[in-house]
Image (cartoon, rainbow, N blue to C red):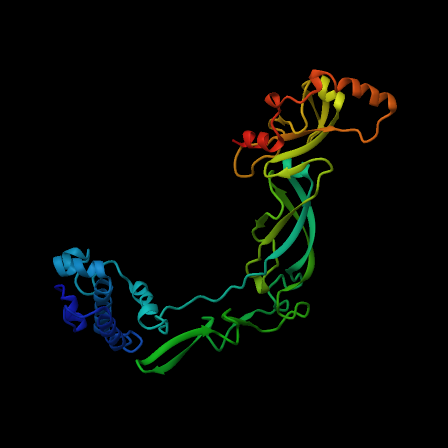
Length: 377
């Protein structure tokens, strides 16, 4: 069968605008719709032919190419009913949301509806050490679980389901509406079976046909290293059980980070404030710094100023999205005594006259924020 002109198919001229194309297609689609012409092959072919014409002419770019080169530009060289540019009935009906506002059912049967259980959300508290290394936790949760006597089916033992008499197993009911465009068919969830397509002959006396009851479950969680406060992890299928053997919901884990006694977290880095006295700052010393897994020793050089930042490379937290690892940044604070004995005062009075104890702006040490900026750059 030879390819017909698309404008001829829709009964329009080449100079019409988009609204006229849509109006012409709507008229053809109503006239030859399969629901109005059951088992009529000729009407079905005309219906498909009109859909192909609309698919090309409603697209400005495709229409321009068609006007210039004809059918060779559309990629559709089959005759009526022989391909239509790769369109099938499902493609054709997908156009109706634009043309008919979604009122057409499209003749496609939907399967019975399977319910999904509700998601379950819990908080899990983690120490800094657990966050650094990852952890396996076993937790007990209260949730909906499958009913044991009926094994989640909702049916009394020895009985079974029967096909819903209202929707005849399809899970949907259809109705015909009279509109200005003619009769339209729509589909909705069956009110008798809730879209499941079947009903219980005799309900379970424990769950009353729901297939679920309140219960407890112990769940093993494998939490990766590097998680952070407020982060959410999802465990598929570990949420509430669904009615009558449906799909279980998911378990949403919300991370709650417990405060560490000494270390403060900022991303993958950890911060620690270390205090030294004036003598150690002037003479130099060593210090023990708490880390996630124990103690680390650092050397404090003589002449260290308050605000100097020392870095313990790789002693921070792992990045959950990469192989990177943070550091521990040690902020040195020189402690100034609040009270002095008379002997201490005399000693300090002598020392402050020394040139070594007089401020020298040219040798001023960088402040904390300058060092932090330098570190991150």
